[in-house]
Image 1 (tube, rainbow, N blue to C red):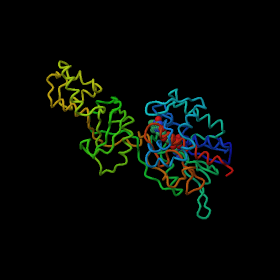
Image 2: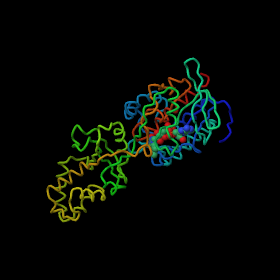
Image 3: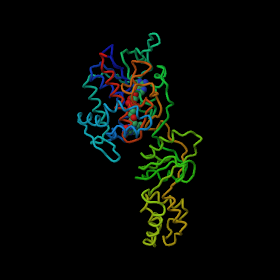
Image 4: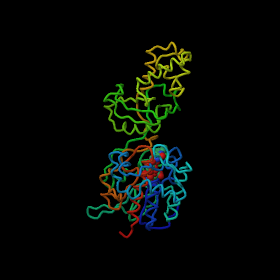
Length: 431
Ligand SMILES: Cc1cc2nc3c(=O)[nH]c(=O)nc-3n(C[C@H](O)[C@H](O)[C@H](O)COP(=O)(O)OP(=O)(O)OC[C@H]3O[C@@H](n4cnc5c(N)ncnc54)[C@H](O)[C@@H]3O)c2cc1C
C-alpha cells in the first residue's frame, strides 16, 4: 500500500466505482482535501464492463418526472440530485472532457467511441485535475466512531494496518452484484454499525434459468422487439394471471434467457415470493399482429409456398434455430410439405409463435446480476445531500442505497447524480 501524502483529510470516499469517483472529484473540485480508498489496484472495474464494454452512460430522458417514474416507486428520492446533475449534465461533463456521446434506440446514451474506457478516462482526469489522492489495494474493514452524548460520529476508516481520519465520509462501496469486480456488499455491515436499516439485498436485472431443455439448443438466438410476459403458472397469457409484459430484445443462453427485456422482467420476479411460483415466460414472436390475423397470413402463405418444406418456410417468421424447435414442439416433421400441413398443425404453429412458453426455475444470482435491489433504507438518507440522518458526517451514494432502475442507463445515472450531490455537500468544507 502506498504512503499517504496527507494525514488529515476533509473527505474520505470509500469505493472507486462511478458513484465514488464522481463524489470524490466533485468534493475536491469545491476545495476539499479528498482521499479515495479502493480495494482493487484500479478504478472502475465494473464501469469498464457496462453496456458490454460500451458503457450505456445515462438515459436521454430530460424530464425528471418521466425518468423517476421509469425507475419505479423509490425513484422520487432522486428528484433533488437529478435537478442538479441529471442526464444532460452528465453528457456535458463527458463532452467537456473530450468524450462526446450519442443517443441510441430506447434513449440509451453511449460514448461516440463505444468505449467504456473513455468514460473511465474522463473520470480519472477529473480526479487528477482536482488533486484527489487515491489509495489502491486498500480494503476498508470498518469505521471508527466517537460518541458525544447520543450522537455517533465517524472519526476514521479502518484498514488492515492503519486507521485514516477525516471529517466526512462518503460510502460508495456498491452492492453485491458481480462480486468479482470488488462489489461484495462490504458497506452494508458498516452502515448497519452506524444504525442504518438495510433492506435485504437481492439480485436484480438478472438472467433467468429456464426448465425446458431445448433452450440450450437455442443458445445464441437473439430476438428483436418481441413481447415478453410473465405469467403465473401455465395459465393463458391473456388472463389476469399475466403479471407484467414488456417489449424489447432477448437472447437465449445455455441455461435460459437474458437480454434487456428479460433483465427488466427479472426486476418483477425478484419481488415475488415463493408462493407465486411457478412462473412462466410467454414470448410473443409476432406482437404486431393478433392470432387471427397471423393465422390468415399463414393460410395465404401456405397457398403461395404449397410445395416448400415447412422448415424452409418458417424462418420467414422466426430465427432458423427456433423454427426447428417450434416444429418439434408442434410435432410436425421438418420435411413435411406445406400443402399437407393440417389446420390443427397450423393452429399449433400460430400458438407457438404467439405464446412460446418457458418455465422459470430461478435466476443466476448475484454472480451475474447487473444490479442489487435493496440496501441502505432511503428513509434514513437526505435526498438533497445524501447525508445520513443517523450519523451526520456520513454520506451514502450509488448502488449501496436501496435504489435501482431498469436497463438503459438509469443505474449509472443514479450513481452520477447521488455521487455529485454528496460531493457537492461534502466539498463545502467551511459549512
Ligand atoms: C455487467 C454489468 C453491466 C452494466 N451495464 C450498465 C450500463 O450499461 N448502464 C447502467 O446504467 N448501468 C449498468 N450497470 C450497473 C452499474 O454498473 C452500477 O449501477 C454502478 O457500477 C454502481 O456504481 P457504484 O459506484 O455504486 O458501485 P460499483 O461500481 O460496484 O463500485 C464500488 C467500488 O467500491 C469498491 N469497494 C467495495 N468494498 C470495498 C472495501 N471494503 N474497501 C475499499 N473499496 C471497496 C469496489 O471495489 C468498487 O470499485 C451494469 C452492471 C453490470 C454488472
